[in-house]
Length: 177
Image (cartoon, rainbow, N blue to C red; front, side, top):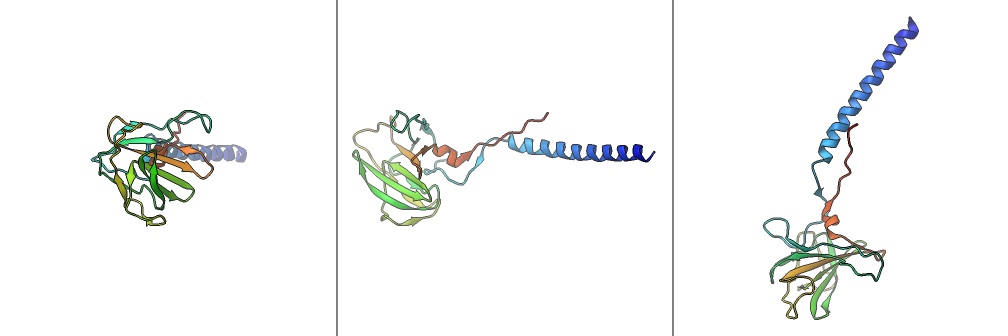
């Protein structure tokens, strides 16, 4: 009799734990299925909603292979460009006739073109504060068919990253059995 009672109590306890775990997993699954969530970076250009993307990041296979190592966002000339994350101005100048700003945040170097900044190299800028403005590029952009900002992200190990993954992170979805 004692052995049978022990089996019943153990089975009941295991069932209760299983039900609690399953209902908790269902709640987590429902939350995870809600789509992407905001990560720790912002888009560098503010529009009425998320910026229009002209061209997405296209990861190259090798260091010198063809690819698009950044994200092109439509933005009119003089549109304000904000720091997507806390950091500092690392470099500003002209590359291939385009005003360019490089911004450093931790191990990341963020490049924006054609963008001009009034700030000196080393100036700290907080997330969301103005970094510069979209500049006119008279030779036409190889990135867009109209005015846009090219935003590149280079990690300290030399790998280019998709800026969208810094803004939105993908969620892992757990499926119910």
